[in-house]
Length: 337
Image 1 (spheres, rainbow, N blue to C red):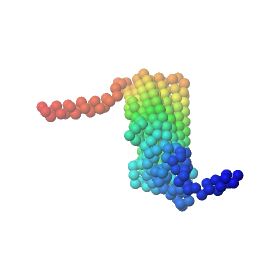
Image 2: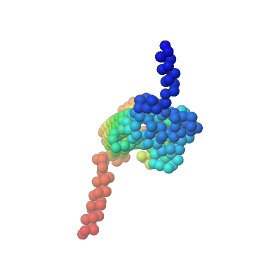
Image 3: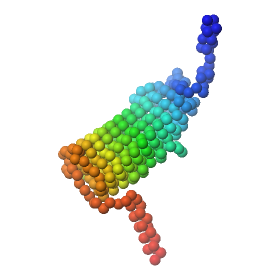
Image 4: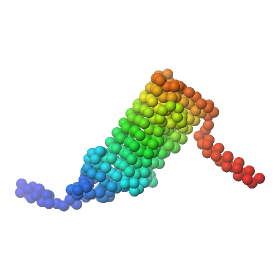
């Protein structure tokens, strides 16, 4: 008993450094100095695989680089603020897989959260944050796969709410995305097999966009309202728009009070089923788009036109590029003559 008591007393005076190297530690960041660190980046630099950094209330003027598998957790998303101070391209740059970011207001950079590295970045979770006053909010860069973006408030940004570039099998759900200067969510250049579900997308220039070979995606059970202004605006300014995108499924969405409900440009083999499409100028507009399936279980109400078709001359992807090259070649040959 005396030996156990001695060991117990002695352990109280062991320095904190004894725990270094262990996985699963928690570091506290607090502006008044009562935590382990006063700067978030210092805590990230000190952390190792599997650690958690818990950030107390306050405003942190930092541009963070997260280059290891850790969790970054804010005390309260309304009052734990990471402010990029418009001093860098990103507020948070994620360069490794398995990173969790939750509980923050993230603001004042070109990109709020930028997922990008020299390798595929997987299994990152961006959840329960407020992302505001940036140009682009969440950007999954090349080969960012199997990540989750959920339950975020993404608002008042001048560009796009969520952008994917050549990224696959990501889950985007239960986000509120109002008041973006361009798209609420946009998938670019072969962003395939993603799920976009149960988001509320309100009063953006465009709602959801699929661009250039963004195929086999599921867009389901979203509420998409008042995007693109009112009346017969530019056709692409729509609740949902596809451009050169194929074999996607659009199901169970409420698409109402947009300039246009659904716009398909040069896109084929998509399935549109069981949606409520109401009070838009065009409910569905097909331009150079063939072999799409529009099921009879869609509900149309109050649109100026429920389904309309423009040109039916389907062009293969890259048509514009070929046209530009041919035009330049024509000019070049003309000069040589």
